[in-house]
Amino acid sequence: MTGVRPGWQPTTRIPLYALTDGRTTPELTLRLETQVRALPEPPAAGLPDERRRLLDLCADADRSVVELAGTLHLPVPLVMVMVSDLIKDRALRMVIPHPTDEEYRPALINAFLTGLQTRWGVSSGAGC
Image (cartoon, rainbow, N blue to C red; front, side, top):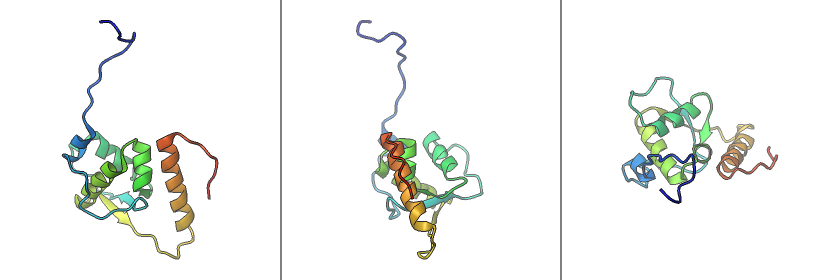
């Protein structure tokens, strides 16, 4: 075969829309800053790898939708559909911080920055 790089191995890739059965709109209304956390009960076996990774990220900390998208290198709308499905399946729960919680705003901004930095590979050293 000409034009093939040495060491190149074909990979099987699935289209991203296959991860959500072609759906592009979540059933629940979510925002970029919506925080979620995995519930302690393990979800049913047989979850796709992307959903399993999403749950693993949310196992020990609250994570924003945008942070999850950046960490998983997936489009935000796709992550919103998966998060919505996992909330409906009772594998994730939304975390509603109290508006007077002094840690809420800096934590939210840092989560947002982390998601963006992870997604775009930028390191600014800025933080709250």
